[in-house]
Length: 176
Image (cartoon, rainbow, N blue to C red; front, side, top):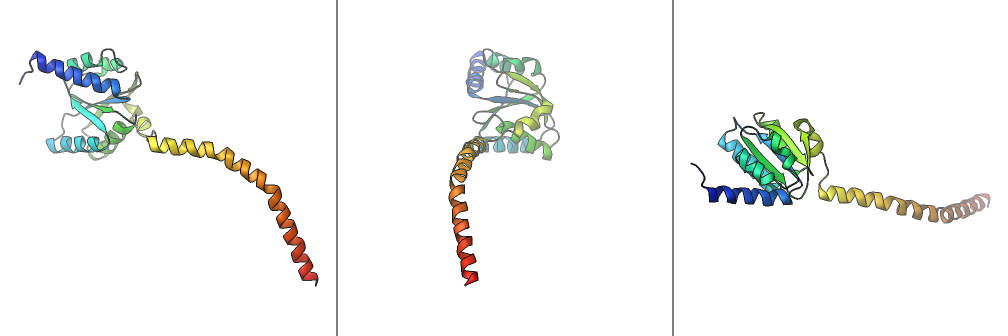
């Protein structure tokens, strides 16, 4: 079924809007997947907050014009599914990494993060990026460490004094 011009414009506008909001995109070849497998992939992507779309490459190129993902033009070859990570840059990479373990027919062709085209071999690096909550927790622990050390340093003389007095008391009790 062919799309009319209005339908193509609507698809390009929708994907362009998503591309402007997204932090990363992954292009993967899906040929060989069954409908059930593709449905499962879409379901997992939806749960992770990842927007997935199967779109013609020419329409994808037009949608990427003027966005940070225009570097993906050369990678858009063959039947591809595009996965956009909206909130966390590594969300789509984690979904694809987990799915490739079960179904080897899904082949990641390219990925892009903030305007840089990365090879498919960098999927694990992108998937290992911390989530937003993990990154905030790491930042808070780094910010908390100097304060904790400062407080321990302030308390150390008092602690030593109390231990010394307790040792003198114990020594006097033993001598009596």
